[in-house]
Image (cartoon, rainbow, N blue to C red):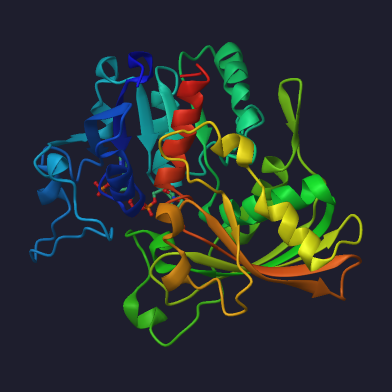
Length: 362
Ligand SMILES: NC(=O)c1ccc[n+]([C@@H]2O[C@H](COP(=O)([O-])OP(=O)(O)OC[C@H]3O[C@@H](n4cnc5c(N)ncnc54)[C@H](OP(=O)(O)O)[C@@H]3O)[C@@H](O)[C@H]2O)c1
């Protein structure tokens, strides 16, 4: 490890579902040292383990991995009073309303890698999925130039968009994609803790609506798959029709996708295009990178969340059931699975931070 990649980092929203995943992803990280855990004034001043403990005594730790011991006694600070002189980079995992004000305060001083939607749709803010459009990250230089910021805001997408663009990117490159219809079956952890999904609502049930989710998937997919022209992103002209549902699964978003391609392609050609996808990015050997971004399975009963979500620590999108479709011109159908709190949130954001540090952007 070279010392010039060491960074002192803060996690803002450290007590939430995505924030907890950040702690797991950053414990023992070779470059990033967590020097501050921040959350709202509700948690401020408490040792971390106390901040995530209910009055009833219940500890609200949502990860499969245990709470890394080094963080348990660390005092949580109020995000509004974070000492930025002691921090080189911030990971933000706060709900978007709060994130809007917070990130606007942080980014003028330090680079902010964000899981929230607060800045995603601004013209000078790319939305990055490492391995798909990491080249768009250079746009942060425009933010710095035009906004006069020392730092920047660099968001990852909504967790449902992530798996979709990982699967579509090799298809846009190989065949072109003209239209997409997607129905998601999204995990409960994607709703976070506040307010989250109430057990009585989702047990023995499917909830057919997730506020704002479908619009996010539609807008973000075009932007991520768009091209960087000069210092602006030209979104891909790709209609995406999304139906997003919440299902009784803990982690891992499943998506049933039908796409109209730009030219005819047999399912085996589609599988082949997906198989080698992202090799160059993976070849960078970044600490949080999986050895493959996309795995294609030929088992017709896969992917399944319980079995497949943890492949390469949740950083690999698994695609199965690739078959022809007769409704669209040059239609193809498949099912994908993407881990919403790993690649879709914290560990994906850590991977993005590794990339921008490696590139000298932060
Ligand atoms: N869950 C996922 O799978 C996922 C995936 C991708 C992106 N995201 C995005 O990540 C963000 C966090 O989601 P989540 O699911 O982790 O939510 P969550 O479990 O509800 O956690 C929210 C976090 O934000 C903190 N917070 C709330 N208001 C704050 C304020 N005014 N100042 C500072 N901190 C504040 C909370 O601190 P207190 O504990 O002190 O209240 C908590 O740490 C959201 O923008 C979400 O869209 C989530």
